Amino acid sequence: MILLLTAGLWLTGSCDFETTEIEEPMPENHKKDFAIALHGGAGVISRDIDPEVRDNYLSSLEEALTLGRDLLADGGSSLDAVEAVIRHMEDDDRFNAGRGAVFTSEEKHELDASIMSGFDLNAGAVTGVRTVKNPISLARKVMEESQHVMFAGDGAEQFADETNIERVANSYFSTERRREQLQQARDQAAVMLDHSGDSGLKGKRDRYSTVGVAALDRDGNLAAGTSTGGMTNKKPGRVGDSPVIAAGTYADNNSCAVSATGHGEKFIRNVVAYQICAIMEYQGLSLAEAARSVIHEKLDKGDGGIVAVDKQGNVTLEFSTAGMFRGAADSDGLFEVAIWD
Image (cartoon, rainbow, N blue to C red):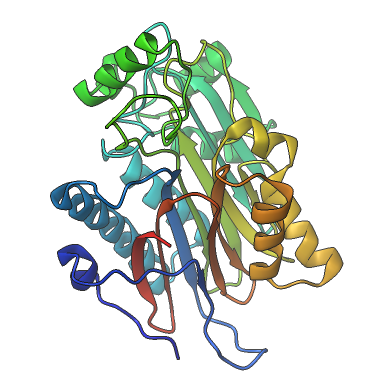
């Protein structure tokens, strides 16, 4: 068995151990009753960040992970866990999704989200929404209450009008920290990833990104979801990988569930989330092997990372950046949150 560290150790900062890959050394046919993995963005996350900031992020990850673990332990579905945890993170202004999302070049917020069921490959996504408090819930409405997979911009807003999805003014998503980040990006004439460390914004490395979840429930069903505010100072209408099924989100009960975070254009070109599942299914590699192959061989160093769960409940958290906000829990007692490698 691997050593399990309590959340308290992470929060006090008294332990520097983190892990990229979490797989129990159980018999090959051992299947966990449930498992969940989440991320809050991958990128240049300095180990020198203020200890209070670090602990607050770890606390946020712990709260989100506890919510998902408890829901799955009580027999909840993987889809419910994915939606509930992402909603929780969308409401936490520390992350670049929902409240606390980055600004576009027009000083507005355009939000993207997607969700997918591994049971039947059904999926839903929205992009460029401006007044939906929790985009992940609208994405699930698209999946379950429409004949389509994705709605964009005004069409997504119109579809939201037809549901009981909670709406807010666009200003609800704004925070002063993100406004300062926009001004710095403008000063540098930069369009930057939320977690980018090469934007020239010296001393401003507290930029964290997309949130996402992958989960396996007691019925053996996988699901994944991803939500983001995109890139700071991006042109209106820009779409990254988060709402794109197969790029930022994918789930298939035959293989795995994946949520990605990183350079969206790269993840779209390499259909990262699907490619990991396909390598498992068609080449017979393990989840960890497939994830390593894609993140470290198909992509460039620093492009981002993924969290994933396979049909046996094995969890892999793989990234090529300096850090990734992440966590994992399962029915065997694993409960862990971490930032650095």
